[in-house]
Image (cartoon, rainbow, N blue to C red; front, side, top):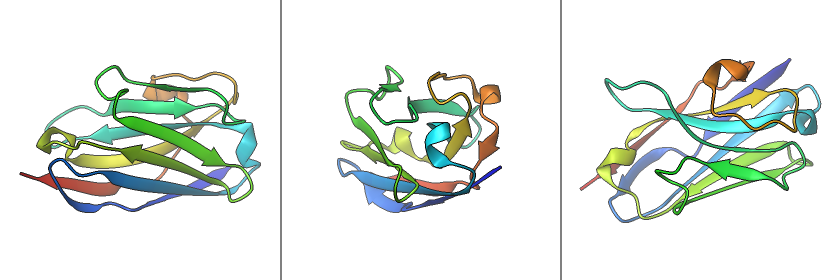
Length: 125
């Protein structure tokens, strides 16, 4: 099993950037692909992007791929999400999630076995 805890959310001004981190504990972290998702009020959960177990391969949703960087540190057991040029539409609860095998990156939320509790990001205009 993997336990995931997100951090770094808060209030950000439009045009600014966010830096979220997810810390994992439990099972071998590099054995999991990691994904970031978000859920805005009244909307379905949306995939933001994913990173493979070794950190060499990343992918992101078309809606954010020009603004997003995902990275991981398998020594510190962390995965980070950086997003710039924020708009109010980026306001959401952001979740990290873990899936196996580590080599398959997917946007399907039901493919992820473990989830963090989420961290709120609010973008003000």
